[in-house]
Amino acid sequence: METVKSLSAAEVIELCLRHTLYDWSAQQGLNPLAVAGGKGVYFNTVDGRRFIDFNSQLMCVNAGHGDRRIIEAIKQQAEQMAYIGPFMAHEPRARLGRKLSELLPGDIDKFFFTLGGADANENAIKIARTVTGRSKILARYRSYHGSTGNTIQATGDPRRWANEVGGGHVVHVLDPYHGIECGWEDATQSLATLEETIQLEGPNTIAAFILEPISGTNGILIPPDGYLPGVREICDRYGILMICDEVMTGFGRTGEWFAVDHWGVVPDLITMAKGLTSSYAPLGAVGMRPKVAEYFEDHVFYGGLTYNSHPIGCAAALGAIQAYEDDDMVGNAQRMGAVLARHHRKLQERHPCVGATRSIGLFGAIELVRDRRTMEPLAPFNGTSPEMKAISQALLDAGLFTFVRWNTVMTNPPLCITEPELDEGFEILDSALEIGDRAVKN
Ligand SMILES: Cc1ncc(COP(=O)(O)O)c(C=O)c1O
Image 1 (cartoon, rainbow, N blue to C red):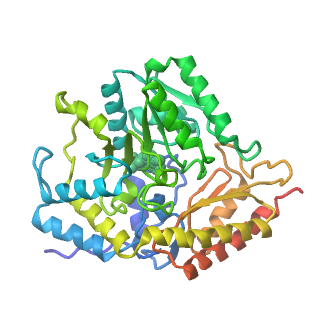
Image 2 (cartoon, rainbow, N blue to C red):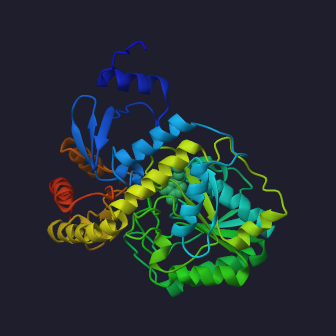
Image 3 (tube, protein in one colour):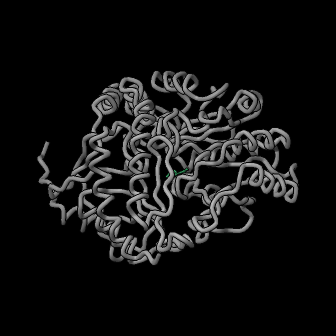
C-alpha cells in the first residue's frame, strides 16, 4: 500500500473547515482542535497538546478513550463480517439483544437498532403513534431529543426554534426546574401541571410522553423524588406510552446502568445510543416492553434502516458493555460521583460565581451567576457572555476540555476516571472560575 504522509494540525483544521460543515455553528471563526488520539480520560492533539476530557466528548465516551477491549471487538468483527443486511440474523445482533434484555429494567426485552440517538427517538415516536393510534407527542421544554424531523420538534430547548415546521403534533410541558432564578417545583406541583396539560390537549389524542429521566444538555436536571413514578402513573392512567430518552444517561453515567433505575421506573419504550458503544462505532437502540412489541406480531413494522443491527456497531456495544462490567465502571461512576460532588461543594464554597451545582454519578453541571442574591445567571438563557467565553478559553488553555453552554459548565468525565484525575480537572476549574468571581456584584 502506498504510504500517505500525515497532515499537519494546521492542514487538518484548514481542510475540515473548507470542506465539512460543523454542528450548531455559523462556520466563520470556528477553530476546532485537530485531535490525533486518546487514552483513558485524556486525548491529544496532532500538534502534541494533551487535554483531560471532562465531558467524555458529548457525554458519550463512557469507557474512556482507546479502550483495547472495544477496539479488539471492532477489529475482530471487521475481519469476520463487516456488514450484512438487516433481514439477516448474525451473532453480534443475537448476543447484543440478549445482553440488553438482561441489563434493561423490568420486562424490556425487544430492541430495534439504529445509528444514533435521534433515529432511536424517531423510531420510538413512530412506534408509539402506530401502537396507540394517536398522533400527539408530549415533551418537556428543557430537553433535547435529536436534530432530525420529529426529534427536533420534540426538543423543547431553543435548538428547536430554527427547525420548526407546522403540524409536528408535539406539545411541550414545563419541567420541574424553572431556571436558576426561580428554582425547583416539587413533584406534586410539576405532576399537576403535566396532568392539566394532558386534560387540555385531550388524553385520547396523546400517543406518548418522551422525556429524559435526567435532562442532559439543559443542565443535568435531576427531578425531585416522586416525579418519575408520578409520570409513570399518569401515563398508565391515560393510556399514554412513556418513552424515556436515555441516550445520554444510559450505560452507567449516573451511577446506575440506566437513570430510571434510581427510581425503579420501567418505561414502555427506552432509547439509547452514545454509551451503548462508548461511541467507538455509531449505534442506537429502541428498547420496548412486550406489551408494545406484541403489536408487531401481526402488524407490519413500517420502519427500516440499511444499517439496522450493523455487525460492527453491535460488536462495539458488546465490547463496551464487557469493559463496563470487567472494570465495574458503573460502580466507579457511583464512587467517583461522591468525589465529584465533594469537589462541586468545595467550588461553591470558594467561588461566589457558583450559584448551583448538581450531580448524580459522573453526570454533573455547575451553574454560574453574577449575583448570588438574585441568582442572575452569568449568561442569559440561550446566550453567552464575555465571562463565559473567557472561562471556556481559560479551561482549554489550561488543558481541560468540557462543554460550556449558556451559564453552565459541565463535569461529565469518562466512567474510568480516578480520584487523582478528578482532582486534576477540578484544580483547573477552580482557577478558571476566578474569572467568574470577578464579575460577581454581591
Ligand atoms: C438526550 C439526548 N437524546 C438524543 C440525542 C441525539 O443523539 P444523536 O446526536 O446520536 O442523534 C442526544 C444527543 O446529544 C441527547 O443528549
